[in-house]
Amino acid sequence: MNDVAVREATQPQSGFEMRPRSMEEAMKFCDLMAKSELVPKCYQDKPGNIMVAIQMGGELGLSPMRALRSIAVINGRAALWGDDLLAMVLASPMCEYVDESGSDDKQGICRTKRKGCKEQVSIYTIADAQAAGLLGKAGTWQTNRPRMLKMRARGFGLRDNFADVLAGLITAEEAMDLPKVEAESGPTTILEMNNPLTLKDKLKAKVESVEAQPTVQGDGAGQASTPGCDQKPSDASAPKDEDVFTAASLMLDYQTIIAEGLTPEDIHTCWDSARESPVLDKAQKGELYRLVQARLKKVANVGK
Image 1 (cartoon, helix red, strand yellow):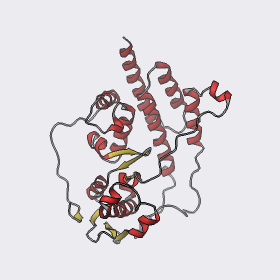
Image 2 (cartoon, helix red, strand yellow):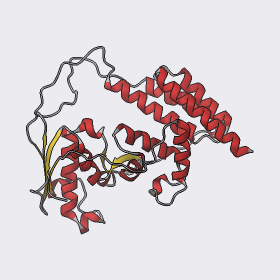
Image 3 (cartoon, one colour):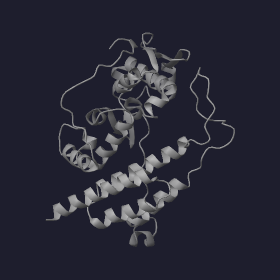
Image 4 (cartoon, one colour):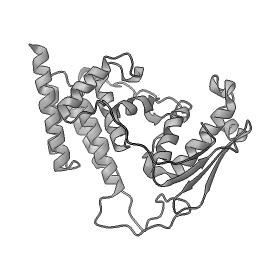
């Protein structure tokens, strides 16, 4: 790949492509993919994860198969491989160029130009890697340090200047260097051990935690902005980014639970919780209802 990449118009593609058109087709697709050895191991035997990945990929403009190939689950966090991150930015009409030609074995340099904005430069040096404790890590930081420096500069530069394109996803290379997420501690009292939370209790706790998340208010201080671009006044009637993200996060949780539900009781419990949620809108509840009906039908057929 050239160090200087300039966006070109994408050519229309033709041919066979598996793209589910309904929730039932999506469930069958996910079940099929979960049994394949050609999908990444983080998705094997996990149709719920596949459905979430396809949903995330769809929001980013990725086809189902490309989403499974590009989105990796590392340390409990979804991420994009560095080359896929670059490909998504170059495919965006907002990108004019990405220049990494200044990178060497001492530092990674990523120059980006967004339409209507000034050129931005992201630099990641050996000193930065040393401060982050990366130079002593085994693996690619020892065998291919120049590329890792370039990947870090690329990740920071593209995320800072094309946050709307990448939707907050980080590079898989960076995710692998993050501390592993510790598993939640188990029950600490005899009462908790003898009375584990039911699925209904867990869903209720999840919904309450999502509804309790604070929203950003005030004069706009602390809000993210694109360097070098003039900010437009916000529309008070438009839904807030925090509300949209909260609903999307809860929607993905419900989709995963329903897709992996093994009994009608679990599926109905999840639907009852989703139906009563004030966070989801009518369209989202309708989508979940169709998923519930398809999953109930599949579970009933398995029992025969």
